[in-house]
Image 1 (cartoon, rainbow, N blue to C red):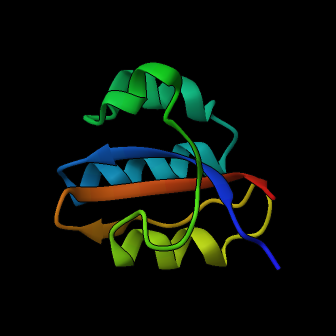
Image 2: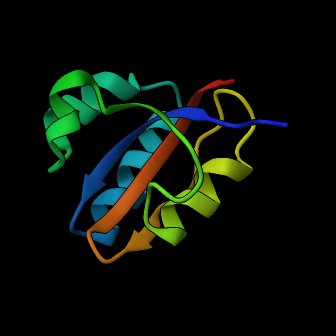
Length: 93
C-alpha cells in the first residue's frame, strides 16, 4: 500500500490557462519550466515540486486526484479553493 506520494503541480487562477497548459504538457512541453513560469504557488520556483506527502495533508480535491494517478501521470485541471491545479505524480513510497 502506498503511504506517501510525491507530486508536482502548477496552480493558476484561470481555467482556460489551466486547460491550455494541460494541452501543452500532454504534447511534450516541459512541466517544470511551465510551473516556474505560470504557477502562483511558491513551489513553482522548484518546478512545482511539493515533495512527499500522505493522505490528510492536502485539500480533498487535490489529494483525491493525486492519489489516483499512475506514475508520471498528469491530471486534467483540478479545481480547489486555491484555483486550478495540474498535478503530476513523480514518486510513491
